[in-house]
Amino acid sequence: MPRGKEKVSSENNKKDTQEEELWERISTTTGAERAEVLDELSHIAYRKDNYTECLQLIDTSIDIYDELGRDLYTRELIHLYEGKAFCLSNLNQSAEAAETFELIASLYATNEDNDGFLRATRASAREWYEAGEWEKSLNGHSLAQGFIDPDITAYSMGIDTLNISMAMQKLGRHEEAVVNLLKARQIFKDDKNPEYVNWCDQYLAESYIALGNGMEALFHATHYYNYSNVIESLDMEPYARYRLGQSHRLLREYEQAQHHFKRALELITLDDRKDWETIIKLNNELAAVLFAQGKDDQAQKILNRISTIEETMGLVD
Image 1 (cartoon, helix red, strand yellow):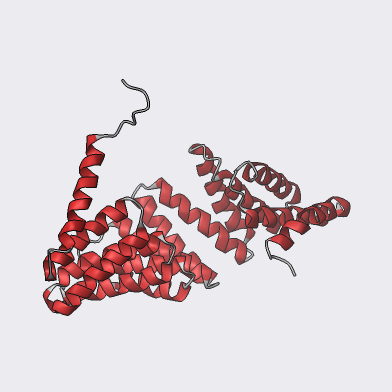
Image 2 (tube, one colour):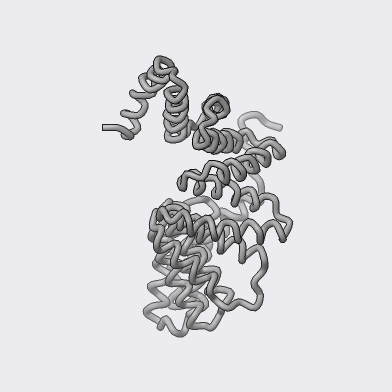
């Protein structure tokens, strides 16, 4: 093979040719046909992760359908708005994505498409959660849970209940969160789904810690930790140990708490993408259990050691 020649697959050539042909068609088409060409181009942009370009193409296509009459092209608009919502989500514009999914849900409702309505409602609630709009997320997931769905599965019932719990936690409504998390845990257990039973244990440990219930927190944190060991997840283990340490500290079992906090720090700092917020919290927890054991000098050294990082991350004045 001659040197200096780059190998280019015929498939890529075909894709490039297709895109060029579509762009050429823009100048020769009008109305719904042009909107369809723009839609096809948006698919290509999306596959290339060109989400901003994809959004521009989608919005132009939507404008054309608006001029032609929205009521005549509901199905096409739903498809375009879904593409828009996914682009916004990929661009981390979660609030805008949530609003777009709400619009999609209303279009599905107009078409009396219950499956589509539920999908869009849940997607909107998830995006509101990502945007930090906990109340809106809770309302969305509660709406989905309360909707009469003859095709509902145990999995979707569990997911709705789990998502409701997570939003409640963010709102500080831990007692209500616990009630829903226990329901979700039982649903996933009956459905033989260890992964999601584990997620429930993780969040249950968190809420019981917030409520100051060390015994229940330890029970669920232990299950969370055991799961991380069974699947040999070094990404999950430090967070499980963090919850174990907090549970033991609530029970005034300071040596056990110290052991888990130290090991959690050893593991979490191995990750190249440092979770500084949790690293700082772990150091503060470790200092607290050292103070509780009368080891004031060791505790103060830890606080001094992380003070600059806390200031850098804006976690102290």
